[in-house]
Length: 389
Ligand SMILES: [Zn+2]
Image (cartoon, rainbow, N blue to C red):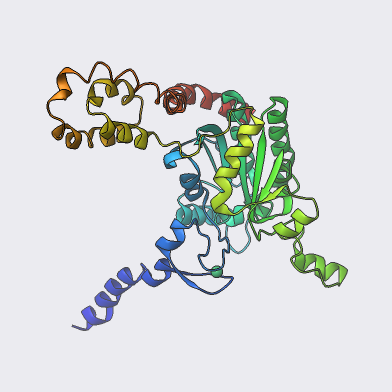
């Protein structure tokens, strides 16, 4: 009995208590102290619902909200030499790296993706502050180069979401080398005439602000983000003066001409779409351009829609096709007689006319899946080859 009560039971209890349910379900807002339920918080893109404080968000979560229908393709980033300096502080560098990989499920502090936002094809790159402080190491440099190369190859704009504590100390001079490397990558975009938009999130500091994070054609920041090279505490200790209120925060930098925009996270997608379409010379985004409602609103109005719709429906996403088919049975029952004989012929003519408007945007999603799998395998080996040189 003793062995069971003293050893086995605590072991079982510890296995279950490791889940730490309360901590995962509720998050305390660091600004106003409100307890926020995890689902409510993630629905609101990790922005506090009571005070609008912008909390950290992982690149993957951000991309899911940013890209149309949450769909994006990851761009492969070439591998880097592991721990070339054999660095060790309290822990070995590979140990720290492994712990961060396990906690985040990501390879390193950068995620590169391609996809469409508001039907505007882009390449996006997001920095993960939860991964070793988003620190800029060799992998981050490689990710920026891979993203820039991909953007140039696809002739798409690049959007970068920065969040970093600076350079990765464990990689020493090799991390500092990523400043010129990433600057060259940004230059590559500029030479190709492609827009480069930077979104600065809380916090973006150190070597990152001394390189790629400050080279955007348009510089946007999230509200309240700390953006600086040396932090306010260091400056205060050095100059021994009290710094002004809100020093180095996004709003302060906007007032002092360091930024173009300070944009709420929920308004960011629309703003990026507008800016990128303007910079790429594309027509303005179609507002409320959902393919499914078009198909379903047409279907109930005209009964013989089944005859014409097959032309349109295959173009629309599978879900839209299902939605278009669903409403049909109801209208069919009401006007039973005129349906097969008279109506099919005259009605199809007016019908395609209202629909051409949604059609051109509808075609775009098809380009995406078609082109990307073709390009992806051919391009990625190139990136690896060039980056390794
Ligand atoms: Zn709050």
